[in-house]
Image (cartoon, rainbow, N blue to C red; front, side):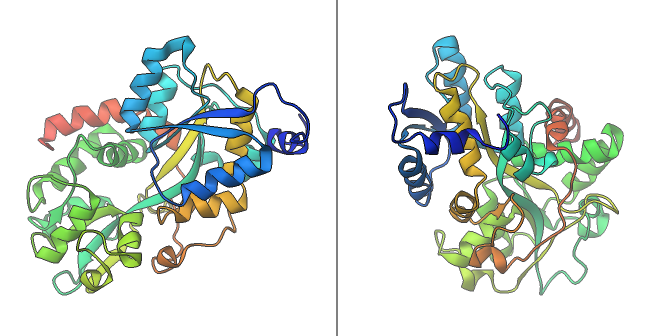
Amino acid sequence: MTRLSTLAVLMAATAAPALAQELNLYSSRHYDTDERLYSDFEDATGITINRIEGNADELIARMQAEGENSPADVLLTVDTTRLERAKTAGLLQPVESALLEERIPANLQDADNEWFGFSQRARIVFYDEAEVKNPPQTYLDLADPQYEGMICHRSSTNVYSQTLLSAVIEHHGEDAAQDWAQGFVNNFARDPQGGDTDQLRGIVSGECDISISNTYYYARALRTDVDGLGAEELEGIGFVFPSMTEDQGAHVNLSGGGVAANAPNRDNAVAFLEYLASDSAQQYFANGNDEYPVVAGVPLSESVQQLGEFDADTVDLSAVAKNVEAANRIFAQVGWE
């Protein structure tokens, strides 16, 4: 297909009978604004979206159990490692789409076109401005002994921890990554625990002075109270978009998706992915969870604007995802629980 995308063809054909006017979506997303995301696609194409929602790991396991008989057309999930896990398990298929290639940056999509990122979140440093006068400026700085006993982070079983260490491996090699992880663990203020919001709460409570969190947890708390954490509690918390190397910016992770390997409605599935790369869908997709769009020029939500634009690490995230096994070995070796 030339300049006309699969989405454009389906939209042009909405008045004509179709063999299959449905899309079976397996999604771990659960945000209210996604309702408009789905209804706009249905209105534009006449395709009904049938949703199966659940935990990402459960959805991947379900697709594996269903095998060739799986009704799944599209898998939507978060974190590069989960997308890569679905690919490695043979649950996705390549998609050749000029529209996706044009709009999604190359480093935010799979090298074999089996998954694509549709929103991004940076994993950055937050700190108590009253206690920390020299906050870490790079990820490697987090292992500096000057921050001993000051840092909160999630457990090694969390995918965000795994992807961050996998990115350090990709940039600096396994040996350097192990040294970094050991220094990082030495600087923990408490045993790893909780989610990203809990890391921010750790600063508020005084349990730690520095924490690492994805940007959208902070932006969401700026916009609305999250179980007692809101804009008032975040006063006095500063943030840094640390760099991964001298010439590479902040580590990012993705919310993304791909077409299921045995998709019974493949054209509809490709059209849906192309729709997610449209300007309107990018705003729904990203703003619903206070994330950064992946398509250049799409406006940021008000909450994300308070964090501002940043320089992102342009490393190939599909290469990063392949380092998870090595990252898990390092976690065990340095005692990162």
